[in-house]
Amino acid sequence: MSYQNPKIAEIADVLMHRFAELENKADILKAVELKALYAEIPTLPNDQRASFGQEINSLKQELQKLVDEHQEQSEALPLIDVTAPFDVNVPTDKRPKLLPAENGSKHPLTTEIERITDIFYRMGFEAVGSREIDDEYHMFTALNFPEGHPARDDYDTFMTIQKDKNGNPLVAPAHTSTMQHRVLTENKAKLDKGEPIAVVIPDRVFRNEDLDATHEHTFHQIEGIYVDKGVHAGMLIATLKTYLNEYFGEKLEVKLQPFYFPFTEPSFELAVERPAILRKDDSEEQKWLELLGCGMIHPNVLKMAGIDPEVYTGFAWGQGIERMVMMKNNIEDIRHFQSGKLEFLRQFA
Ligand code: DAH
Image (cartoon, rainbow, N blue to C red; front, side, top):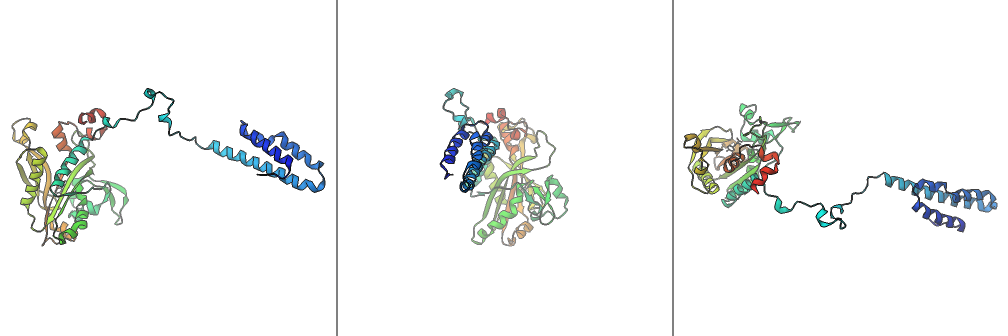
């Protein structure tokens, strides 16, 4: 601000400089120079008093503003010096270090999920993710679980307090099958073009389990869906057998036993011959490893997705990942996967 009166202008300049150096900034308002200026007013000729007085008031206001601004700034949280870890004055060996990338490694589950997904990719399947919150419609209804059917209880599903638009709780999906209806509806245009729907869904699922060495509340599944004209159970078996041979790197027998899932008809449980190096003894129990649920997609599931089951048929399967990774790597407790313990993770580096 500039002042007309040369005396006030000079004092303003002096006070600004002093303000910069003052420890207690508010002291500037008590400056003797200010008081002296006010004292001068009555000594001035009448016609000068008003303008002189106004200029002193302006100077006082300017100083008051500086004091207020300083107060606000000093009450703000201190700035964080983002260059701190790289202070050049600190000797190199004393500087904080970021963990070198080579110290990290992939989580064993990520490694296996990538391997499995890659095998299916080479077989012509596309991969999509699941979700961490869904509704009962996708988790059950669209999969042909009748309303209130006891089979819904088999899934120990976590539910939220929030409700969906139908007044049902939202769910943390307990199986990757929760994506079936979406995958079918979103891809049915392919069928019209004469292309199959071939999708795998590797992702996390959640169940309200009692936790122990073989049960976790959060684990992983890979779901598979294949739909086209003339698809039959022989193709389901051939697809899964090809995958398992590729995964274990040897030709293994598979065995199907009848099972029940509301969303497949017929439904099976598939067991694979346990690779010899992973067998503890010659017992029949050790020979087979129950690996996954599968079957021919129920006509109702296709219908609900707008696909005519008289024209198209398909198969689906769902496999838990942890158990297979545990067996392969001799991991005794499923809880290690989520423990975040470096002693565990480093074994897979
Ligand atoms: N969703 C089933 C489960 O978590 C597994 C499953 C079985 C998936 C059969 C499928 C299937 O797609 O066809 O127990």
